[in-house]
Length: 372
Image (cartoon, rainbow, N blue to C red):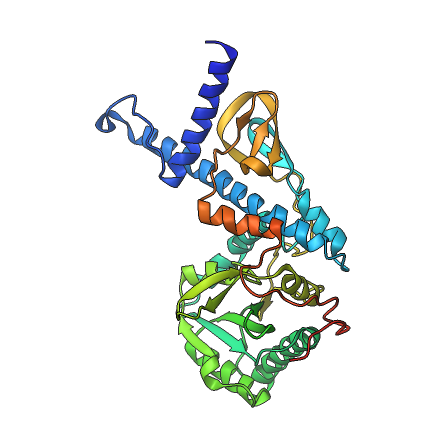
């Protein structure tokens, strides 16, 4: 087998491993399924999970890079942190079955957020599983403009703290739960929606929290608050993100579609969240990872296939994957779907998919904020 054929074979194998995790490729079986031992099937399942993890990471890398570039080009106060995200995990080193890299640790990096989210779930999930009837609570306030966002976020966090104290002192009911701070963007109105999500021990506590919230915010609609039972899936939902990268809009024909949030609006949200904890335990303490700390460089990912020699994998945005430059082989075999590629490349072209948002320079100072 010559060098070209060997490279083609290695690339095909890498793509098959990733494809199996996505359900796109069925590898021909060396033996009939009935001849496989349980141990063999377990090993194959483990291999698929490893490949799937790397494929998901490649997908997040593919989306993060152009978004971070556009954010850095705004030349705002977070420019350097956005640039750190551009170079996050640009090179991975594989030794045996272990892959390591240098990660930026920023909140808006989708790769680092996913790593941190997995750690948060491992910390909080065992605790929340001990609660017999947990409830998912949403606490909202009316939307606000960019120059109001920092102050509104500060207020809702402080009000929840006052509610926790009131429940303990006046109602003799401790508020035990996990709080998440989130903010979304309304493209039609060009304003922002900061709100809180909580998981608390039971429905009685959830309803008391909502009652006290409405007392503090009489201008809020009771219908906009929400209490519902939750489960393990709700725990994962709580830790997904602190802002969405897309917004739902209704077309002239009445169809609801998803559009990319303008980077100017994302920058407003990211600036307003600086110094704020997205996740906060209430009524108990945990050893949770620092939300702004870099990812530990000793953290490693298990590769789908072990290599006898060290391999350097460099990120190539054009192929949406890490590449071994000495052979041309890709690490994951990830291939973006056409719609997702279009979505990501819209950041590079500056498209928002809808109207262009005004340029807000600083949500704390209120500079260059449009009249509402």
